[in-house]
Length: 83
Length: 83
Image (cartoon, rainbow over all chains, first blue to last red; front, side, top):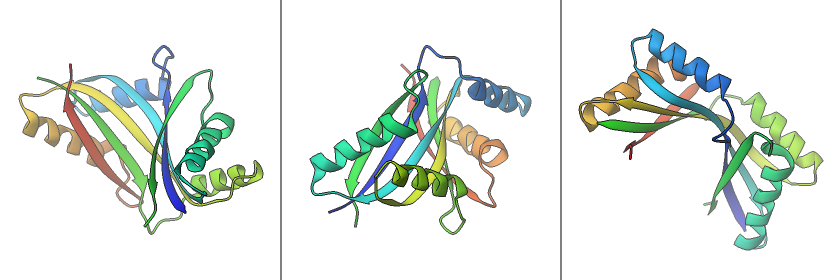
């Protein structure tokens, strides 16, 4: 089966997010009063797996081994069958 | 009213995504056969607005004026009341 996973990688709540601070500053500079800005990544991946359980395991491996830095980032996965 | 918006910024479909290609290569190097990898950003923002219409307008301004480069990126917005 073919799957599409979206892996959301976000800075952990307790970690400072300098990129978010920079975006907040830039938004304020164009007149928008914002706070609590956080910047994460989303990685969309297509792959084959025997079934949904195997696919979910693969996405966990992707997040843990490569996409997220566990010291400063969390990740969540949205998984769906492709097509 | 207080709102939280998540602005998803993604490379346009017809545009090459070198970051996605790099991630695909790295995932393959740890034994995961993937393709069609695309890397986007997600920006979470908190702000005040009179109502949902005004809030949505603000997020459109954020996306258009600052967060997305319209030549190579698209953006979508998820908006909800905070708390």
